[in-house]
Structures are given as structure tokens and as C-alpha cells.
Length: 333
Image 1 (spheres, rainbow, N blue to C red):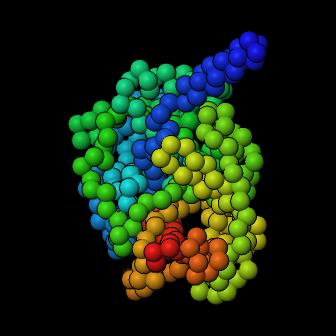
Image 2 (image 1 turned 45 degrees about the vertical axis):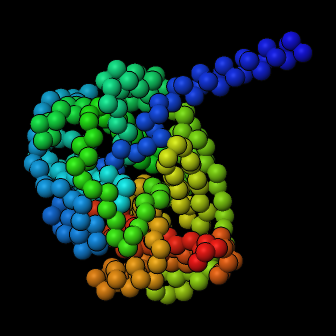
Image 3 (image 1 turned 60 degrees about the vertical axis):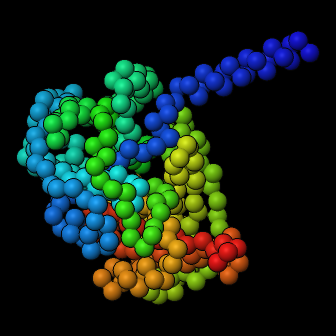
């Protein structure tokens, strides 16, 4: 009995140590960083969609930043926004050499990075040390001033194995002056990715403490792709950590919006989810404004509690990020 008690205590201590290595900032995403080539057009598109909590465009200079161990300076246009509860930063690279410019040339306008923010500098530096100790390299790093706020950032070379760029910030909340606003009484629900290699991606992110994917394969009814019936198929990988949900969309049979994204941009952040109380009303409004329903269908037993519907609205041309409208059938519907 004594040996068993000792073993349990040791296991509990080990569990606490492992979990202590994962800072709480990973339970939230501070912002999605999106790279664009026409920031004015991107803003106009999202305003037409119904997101209006968007700040002004700022032109800034990144001085003495490090890109793959070389010192570099470059310019960029930046605009901050809230798409529902999701913080967005749109960045249009200007003159100079940067990871932003090179990534944009290779992938096109894209949701580039998920960034996690530290308000404490010591905690930020401790996390840099923890990540680099796992042989994950820093690809770009520096300090900038935005609206008289000094912001330190680090981008890790995680795209190749993890399908998105992990970013860390030491800064106050630069989106705090923007109101969390979404059309159609929508509620932000998920960050979502398109990938062809879920097992490898899951294993890669587990090394820093992000939970493993739970992969599901759900029957979908009334499948439509750009208005036409198609027998597409996909699996979904779920990672739940703290207050955030990551959905990994794994195409099995084309056509799908996930296959389109991978063929156009390679794997990466593909959409955000927005739960709405009336999906038909939202679709009618958006199609009247020129947004096509790219992919749609339903899950569960149609018309019964626990079932639901989804519709991807084609906002891809405005920065490489789609919106998935989600509606769930509840017992009180």
C-alpha cells in the first residue's frame, strides 16, 4: 500500500511538472496575423461582410529585426480588427527583407500565424527559452512601436511541421480599444486549419504541450459545393485547450474548400467559425452582398436536437480566410 501511494504521488508530481511547462497564455489566442497584398481591399471586403470593428491603417517601420540570424529593417501597413471575439492583425509588407514578404510570395495572402501574448517580460523570455530548448528555431524576431506601444515579438519556424507559424508577443492588448462585434448575432466558435497530415501535425504540437488531436469522421447530409450537390468527404481533428477550439479539416474526397486551400496556399489556417441563431437569414444576407456559399451540409439526425448545419462563405479573396457559419439544433428550437 505504501509503495502504491508513493507511486501515485510521483505520478501526480510528474503530471504537475509537465503541465506547468505549458503557460496559460496558450489557453487563448491573442490574434490571428494575416498577410495581405492589398490591405484597403481586404478591409472593404470584411466591412461588406458585416464586420465593422476595424481600426485605421498604420504605416510602420520594423527596425533592426532579426530574420534567420540576419539584421533587417522593413516597412509594412497594419490594421487591427475584431472578427467576433477573434483579434485580427492584417499586415501588408512593404520595402525590405522579411519573413512576411517571403511567406506572402510563396503562399499568397494567408492567415499566417496564431499569436499568444505575454504581459510579463520574464514569462515571455522563459517561454522563448522553453520553445527553443525543443530545437524549434526562431525565424524572425524584433521590437516595434505601434501607437506608442512597444511590442516585442517572436515568430518560430513551425510552419513546415506544424502547418502554421507559432508567434509570441510581449505587449499590452493592442486590440483592447476595438469592440467584439459580429453580424447576425454571431458567436465566435473555433480556429480551423486544412491539413493532409494530421498525425504528424498532432505529434509535432504535443511536444510543446498542446493536446493531441481527437479525429472524428461524421456523416454529412445535403452536401453542396458552390451550389451543386457533390459527394465530398473529410475527417475532422479536434484540439481543445482552455478556452479555444482548434479544428483540423482533413480532406478525403474532393471537391472541398480544404482541398482548394491546400492546392492554392498549402496547408494552414483556413477559416474561423461563427455560430449563428438563424443560418438561412445569414446566408440570404451575405449572398445578396456577393458572397457565395462555397460548401455546405449538415450533421446528425436532421431535425433532431444535436444535429446542425454549416455553410462556408467565400471570403477567401479578402486575405485568405473563410468564415464558416454554424447552426445547432437545440431542444428549444
